[in-house]
Image (cartoon, rainbow, N blue to C red; front, side):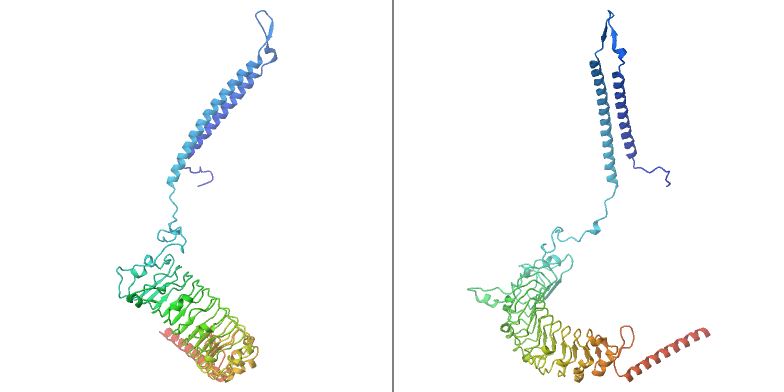
Length: 507
């Protein structure tokens, strides 16, 4: 199409525009003629205004009356033109509206269906957390329940997140249910659990629960013998409880779970350790990422079978309350406010792993008589990264040590590292992000100090590095021998390729 070609028009639109323009032009013409007629009739010459009567006496024409008559005539013409113009304009507007209606019918609807979110039980306008959705709304439950099913696991996905556990949950699950996992949903209230008499594992990880309840029927007065047998269930049978990543502030209700062995209640809003003092069967407790400031001895001292205690990411300033935990194997108090290591006398024979990274512990704080200065027999892993250590002297006597993580401290020279040269069991050390790690021969000198090292930082000693090059470490003779072997392999490979290409040319 060229510039001189007429532009295409939608059917009916051009005719409508033409009719509208003609009506407007006609109205303007009539109005102009009326004005010209008025002017011609009013402009009477002076000599024509003087006339004579039959007697010959002159008289004046009544000019005012004549002008009034002419004005009336002009107004009538204007009104007629205006009416005619209005009529034609209305007709044009009606035609235009009809044409617009036709155009709207021709234009297809926009394909917006693909932009809509998945329907959620016909509650599209409701926020996901406010929608009402039960477990049986996101998966099929056979009715009556299959009594052979002992495990139920539902992990929340987009558009399929449970918001209510349901007080009648027992009607949809087996009477023999032992494991219930409702992970990553939008549940606010614990309910329906007290009727699950055989429940051993309950996981409500990553929800919106603000209170622990429904673990036991509570106090019941004047009960019969049959009801007394069910008292305390399911709390009496519960072995594992995971309610991490919620908004719980009070952990006292856990005191009903007397046979609990593992408790995970990390990433909540707990300020103090309460309710676990009588849980003598506990073997593992995770209270990390809360708001705890003190390690209360009255609560911790009763955990005589505890093997793992995780208290990272809290606000603890002193280690304490664990003197009676003689079975403790792993202790994590990293990312707190510690400046010293103390009160570990009860773990001399059992402690295997100690995690104290991201604190403010210096050399003197680490050498406390009740801390690392003790002769630990089983301690094989220590993580004291991101502290204020200036040398490795606190670890010199820990002969059972296998891994030592002390990256991100202030160790400046290899003389400061010499203290660990006697640790014959040490095979992995992390010293990166210390001033000493910037030395050109850092890895080589470190292996000379601790010959048994198999790993320095994240790289194996004498192995192939990230980019395929031989890493430092090992004796000089050993390194040269490995380089010769690799050189021989390359030569042999090149010779084989040359021979193969020569054979092809001969053929």
